[in-house]
Length: 336
Image (cartoon, rainbow, N blue to C red; front, side):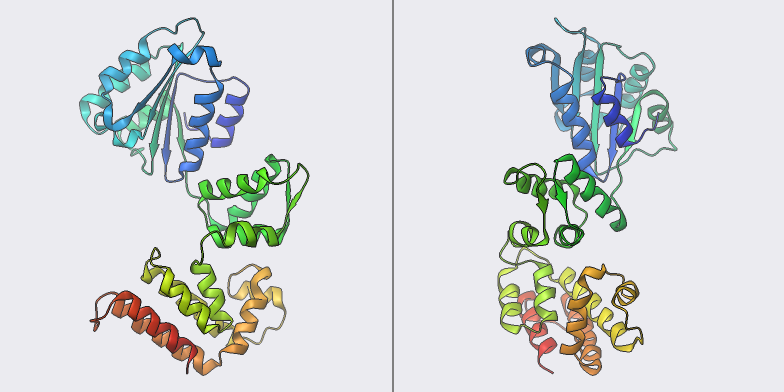
């Protein structure tokens, strides 16, 4: 049966579980959260030696796995069998392996909890195999959160840590990290270690401990360009080889497209201006300052420069390196 992540976690915390869990989807954070809870919480420490089996998909056959699942627990009421990286399991992709699992799903061992952590992919729900998983197991499809869902996730995660967080800090966490829930959780955990219960995470803390963990990042590059800080922008380009150039150009293109809208709008209320360019009101002042740094004519020219750089990075009329293209682009953006 298909269930939500939250419902499954709540049931597990109450000690309510069923024989087979199939966890799939692009958002690995929830798959890891459920797998970790089952691995760490359902068995007492003394029971794990003989009753906890961790297998990995690439190294596992369905026959051997199900043989393990069918045995009885030793000196415990339950045994747990977890298949990590199950998307690498060859038998989940062939007919023989699927038939073996389908038979087990119809006749599961009630004293075994069998978990498949099938990351980044999903089984076709229209197939016979997919329909059987939905009918005879707890099937969870973990999807990436939309941008508008991130603030609620961050707020709830922080509250679970017995902390508070300002709206500005939530915006910065989202801006610096994006929708990588695993990294959001990791960074907030690091902050949590250094704070007492009931403390409030501020935007200053996010800037200091999350935003600047790396010397520079794409968000910092955009900020430097908005401020027309050529030395810092040039430095970022020089040290940011771990970032692909094309995504940088896309982000900067979106920046100047937003500035073009602000140049042409007659709106003056900051919150409404933020809505027009689809950003959080917390960031609007930075964009308004950038409008003062770049005239309408410069903004239009910069969009042209970005388009030309995009073509060069794709191999059109280019015989220089990505780094040279980006350094030339940064110069042209700030020197009309």
